[in-house]
Length: 158
Image 1: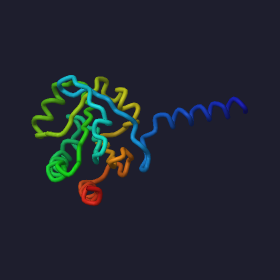
Image 2 (image 1 turned 60 degrees about the vertical axis):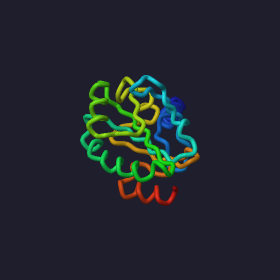
Image 3 (image 1 turned 135 degrees about the horizontal axis):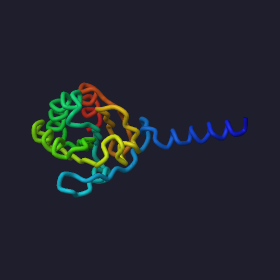
């Protein structure tokens, strides 16, 4: 019985270690290379509202969301809004082709490993798209906001 309790405690601790950040929590650091190989850190965007957008070129709902993100980015980027796009594409050529096709102008990074990449595992990403809106202090204020919710939050916080 004592062994079962210990196993349950260890499993609970392991689950917490890979749990997605919750609303009100500080987002863990991310450091992933962009298309030019330069590492871009989440902390580089300190003082801005940041949407962390986990996506992939093969994800239909991800690609369908891009026009709405482009519209929000165009409207609010000058006011302090940034998007940190993290591709789970395993083929960098597919990722780069999607960035060009969807006319994505915000920060894009891609980490080898797809679903098994360090960042996807650390953030416990299990579905795409997955998005987290952070306030200017780096705390999560929304998870997977709709286009309308994102726009409302941007109006409120910028």
